[in-house]
Image (cartoon, rainbow, N blue to C red):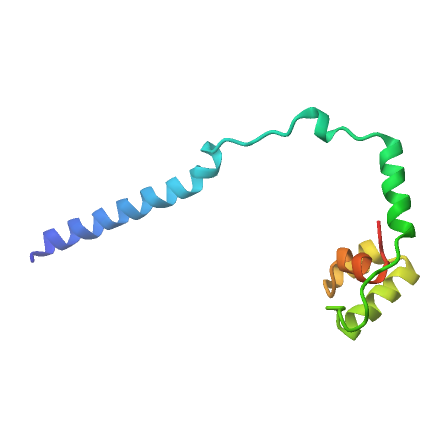
Length: 110
C-alpha cells in the first residue's frame, strides 16, 4: 500500500467520524418534542394546598428494617430538617436526596 493511499484512507476515516459526530450532536434538534395538553399542566391553588397538606400530614410508612438510608443519611435528614437547611446545605452536600428524606423519614418535604 502506498503512502498516498494510506493518507487517503486516514482522511476518509476522519471525514466519516466527523459526519457521525455532527449527526449525533444534531439528532436532538431534529427529533419531535411531545407537548402535553394545556389541561394537564394547569393546577389550581386549592389543589396545590391539598397536596402540600397531605404531604405534611403523611407519616413515613417504612420500618427501620426496610429503610434504604444509612445512619449518616438519616442523621443528615434530621439535622437539615431541624436547621432549615434542606434546600441549601443538604443538597449541596449531596449525601441524600431530598425526596428520600421526605419519603422515608417525613423530613425536608417541600
